[in-house]
Amino acid sequence: MFKTKGDRLESLIQYVYQVLSEFANKDIEVKNKHNIVGKSGVIHNIDVYYQFELNGITHKVIFECKNWHSKVSKEKVLALKSILEDIPNSVGVMVAPKGYQSGANKFAEHHGIELISGSEESLLAAVIQKRLQVVLPDESVIGEPFYCLMEKGDSGQVTGTYIRNIDADGKPFLILYFSKKEAEESGKNLNSIVRGIDKKHLTILCDYSDNFGLNLAIKQFMSTDVLGVDSKLIRDFFL
Image 1: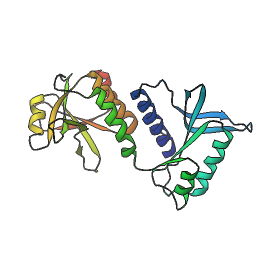
Image 2 (image 1 turned 30 degrees about the vertical axis):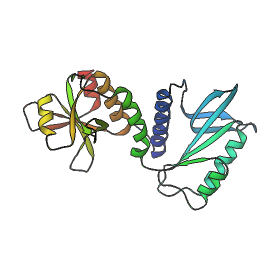
Image 3 (image 1 turned 60 degrees about the vertical axis):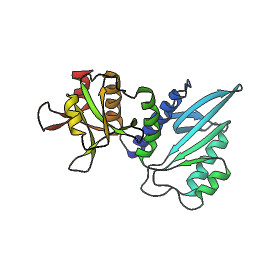
Image 4 (image 1 turned 30 degrees about the horizontal axis):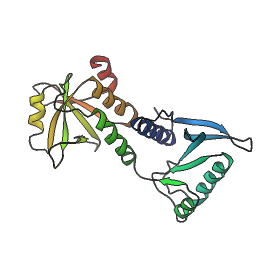
């Protein structure tokens, strides 16, 4: 579990960029809470960090994560600029879900610092889509042992989005079906396609559940009951 909201955001950013680098076939390790010594001799603790080689030069990418309730000020972007000046061949990215105060964007643009804002869901969206392009269950996948409903696009193909339900607390959850026929019945009035979930896809769903709060549920065979289930139980019994 994450100790703070900041820890959660840092882990999310580390995950996002690690998966994107793997998708691009780049041998890059994205690190969380990485210490690096600047030209001044001062040790900087970087929220999220990775580096890569290009034309014989090591380039460093430094992320500053601000999971605050308010917008980030220009002064915080200035503080990141100071760190970048102390670390040669580095570029900076600041991530703040609530956005930035007036002047911060203009200052960051002038100094080549990228500012990212938006919800966790929006940050994950690109990664989920790209990762599912590689491991998206197609019609040939047989449920081992589950089936699920996926959104159908205008062309009749899956969009890469799992169809989720909403519980009494307003939280989304994904239903796993033991029966393909029951999944088809449940999705009859939805714009959906039934897909099998094998062990590879089930592992990914459990990873999302463990790290980013994707709630999972299992529909009991020949019953209307849908029971929420912890990812650990799924791993213990089905993986």
